[in-house]
Amino acid sequence: MDKRDYYDVLGVERAADEQAIKTAYRRLAHKLHPDKNPGDKHAEEQFKEASEAYSVLSDPDKRARYDRFGHTNGGMPGAEGFPFGGGASINDIFGDIFGEMFGGGAGGRRQRQRTRGSDLRYHLEIGFEEAAFGTVARITIPRPKACETCHGSGAKPGTGPKTCPTCGGAGEIRLTQGFFSIARTCHHCQGSGRVIVDKCPACAGQGALREEATVEVKVPPGVDTGTRLKLSGEGEPAPVAGGSPGDLYVVLQVRDHPIFSREDTEVLCEMPISFTQAALGATIDVPTLDGPAKLKVPAGTQSGKVFRLKGKGIPALSGGGRGDEHVRLLVETPTHLTKEQRELLERFAAISGEDTHPQARSFWQKVGDLLRER
Image 1 (cartoon, one colour):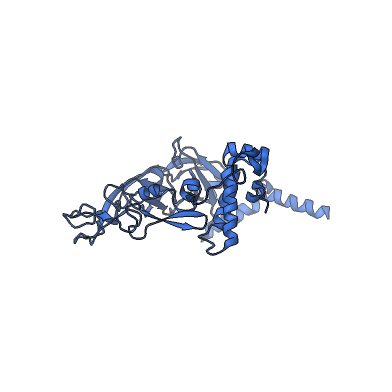
Image 2 (cartoon, rainbow, N blue to C red):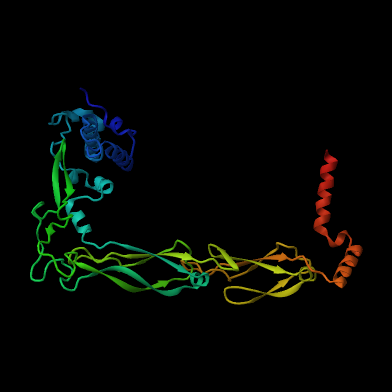
């Protein structure tokens, strides 16, 4: 049977760049891989075909020869011009791609990754002002601690881990499946290459004991809900001696404030004022994160009017100053009037003209215009 065009196999244009070719192959390999299609010969053949196409098109020299001569390779030696050796290791040929899809590249790289301790996650709730200006919090987290009896090895004192008899210390088992030999993590030693025969009596071979650790968290100014702080080395200890500990990630939750809300670095505040303050004008005290501030309210201020207090907002997390505070004034309608107050308001209403209610006058003018258009 004639070979299919390599570009058609991967489903890319002939002008496709290296990244497009790699992405197309990853998609096909993920779909057709023998591990996902056990016993499916058709999928296995398609997988081989896609792998062969990628091996040529991902190599600039091979691709240039293929673009010029096709599968004949210009008469160069080889079964089809581009020999693709049987029994090739999937880790050697496609390590970068399958490392991303199946959790690691070559066995040595996976083994090194497993010498690192696991990361921990902690949710910390802080106040609105603490988020704005920063704080230092002390948190207590349960985490493993290296066993002092065996110094984290998990082996009984006087003994040590032995070479894994299943993988011979390689940390992986290589299985031949169809066209490829595929490396899998050794189930006996979990990829470490060593096993504990005589377990430490203090930690039962785990190499660690549970403890509660107190950690100091420095919260910088300007954080918000969802901000994640990384504390390097404060996670779980390494599962094997000599490895590095994991990290601790602190995820912040900022409590709601009874007066303020925020949008990024801007602080929002709604403040009631009296009918007379709005009508006659006044100088009022407005709450801010720094304490009360004076705000001059012009005579005739309408409900909903927003004033800005520059530099009274939240500090930017990345630096560069503070945002502003926006104060929205809400004019309160007087209630529970005394007889005298009611009489005065009735007198005010009687002598008021349109000039004292410009918004109402404008509204009714628009209503009149609409009626006349009908």
